[in-house]
Image 1 (cartoon, rainbow, N blue to C red):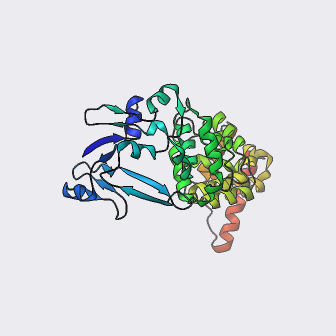
Image 2: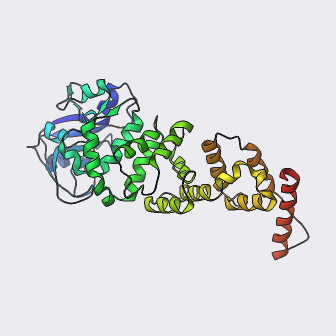
Length: 347
């Protein structure tokens, strides 16, 4: 029974990056051995266990065989007969298919160290093509390591895998974006997808080249930044996209409001008093929450414009109170007061 540190932790050590979590593979052991040593299994149908003291994940070395579509259609075999090399072979990229033994010696059967040195993202084996989620994982790693290039053979495989992307759950694609969004170059996520023509079905109708350019030129980062899809796309296209991807409500609302109202707010004085009031109401300036701030912040990011004046003015409008009237009359009086303030400031 031997234990090896594997995957991203080994890669990050070699790159002198901070190691955020560690995963381990156990070779030469069985399920019985793990339970006997006090490990607690994660779920009932997968050979992954939590260490009784550290809580870190330890997996039995395993092999896998594709049986269906999507990223879950696999049969796997774990046992004391599975070698470390067989386990590493099923991994996605060579830079993630290295291990360290108990003496801190490096085990690198697929050339990951060499690919690190040459800054290449390369698939380990033909088994890469069995999991369509890896198209988005490679896009995420391209965002994480912007100085790396994707091996041409890997790009070819990714392009062949595009028809199976429809079988993926939206939640997993969103999660890959969340992981890419805070990396050094989120724009490479979209650039890589464009390179392998991975529009269908999730990015159907989305101009990935325009999205790449916007993210790259404006230095956009963070999960919410995906809402800028509303900047260069119609409200209908934006709505269909965020619905397919099942993005969080905050991102969805910001994307649709940006598509509907965003570009006109760059020059608020051109809208007239009633037009500006309608636009500010549309982005949620008079409701509780971050809706209006999200949209104005996105406009600033997309247009490289300073919007603090409009932001502060929207807050002033939101704070107006009227007295002496109630019910429907109150709403009419409040609207009239806001119109007067807009006319004084912008018209």
